[in-house]
Image 1: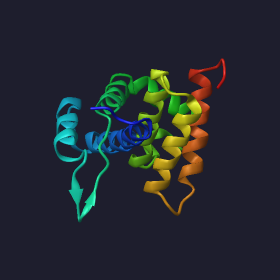
Image 2 (image 1 turned 30 degrees about the vertical axis):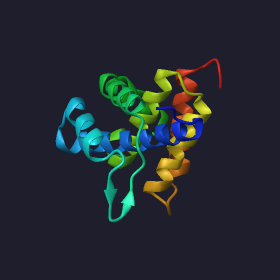
Image 3 (image 1 turned 45 degrees about the vertical axis):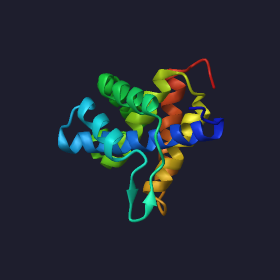
Image 4 (image 1 turned 90 degrees about the horizontal axis):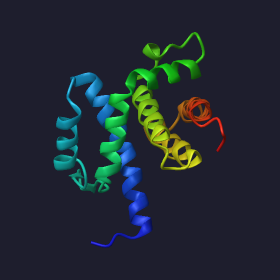
Length: 155
């Protein structure tokens, strides 16, 4: 199957959103990476809810983000803590934002996607979860700080 560049971008964007949802779900349910990947692949990617068809996700991107976020969670959380102000340790952050930071940081660590693209994608996801809040700007600031730590040579 030949997938156009635009469709591939949409599938990667969907995979990022699904990764945030999966990390949130894993934190609350204790599910393993394997079980959540299987569930999302079977029941979420391309599923229809209330006559609304969900975007097909890129399984490779989704799996890579989850694997990296879980396997390097301690280091990711430490980087996130350093990017947060002292009054707001990671444990006090909304669980959706924690999942966003973990997925975004995981993608920055993979180093296959330009950091500006990663930031834009995860700021957009924050906007989908928090359409009326300041969270998208907060996500941008934290991920920008982390990106500069991971990639000191610059963007």
